[in-house]
Image (cartoon, rainbow, N blue to C red; front, side, top):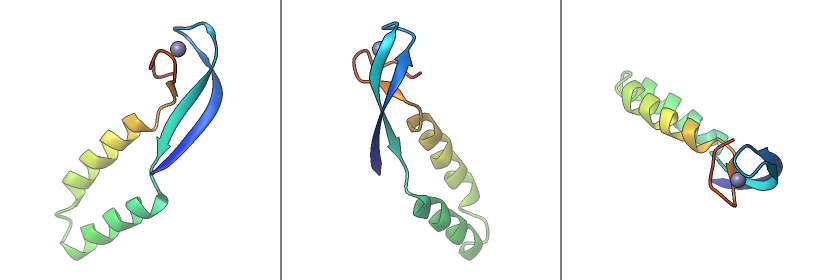
Length: 69
Ligand SMILES: [Zn+2]
């Protein structure tokens, strides 16, 4: 996973704060797609769940208060 940082406005701190986001490597999605085809789409459901969880991780989080903005 890639760790990215960015200056963003935080609604909780009401200031521009440093935010962090974990980015999933594009390869992860390719592997899910490949496994889905190989295992006759059995990976679609767990894959969708994993991607759903990852979408939550993709939000920018304030480093000070931890709020997702
Ligand atoms: Zn904050």
